[in-house]
Image 1 (cartoon, rainbow, N blue to C red):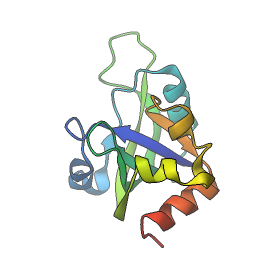
Image 2 (spheres, helix red, strand yellow):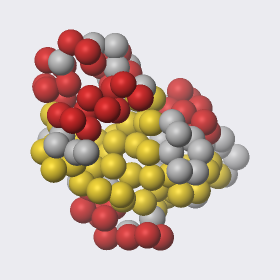
Image 3 (tube, one colour):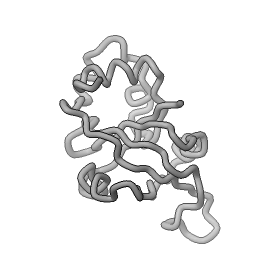
Amino acid sequence: MAYWLMKSEPDAWSWDQQVKAASKGAEWTGVRNHTAKLNLMKMKKGDRAFFYHSNVGKEIVGVVEIIREHHPDPTAEKGEPWVVVDVKAVEPVPQPVTLDAIKKEPKLKDMALLKQSRLSVGPVTADEWKLICKMGGMK
């Protein structure tokens, strides 16, 4: 299993909206960065991702699971190469992990979230995943 971090502005698509999508999940639309697109294309069914509220909140608030691998983004203009994956909510993070807390943790200094701060979909190592889960009060 691979781990990821997926950013969404809560006024565009929030954790609460993701939870309401229930087991049918939702397409992760609107990614318009080639590096992020390549990350979407690497995702496999069953991979997990942190759901990160960007701009407002700037914190990890939940965990989602990839339930359908990449396919064309229905919000893209005809002929554009953008893709989506479908994700469903797995569980909330009991104590949301803020960007500030991540920046203060020396073991996370090389995390893609910090190194490529504008990237909307990025990888998370297994060690980073475990540490952030611990920081968020998850088992």
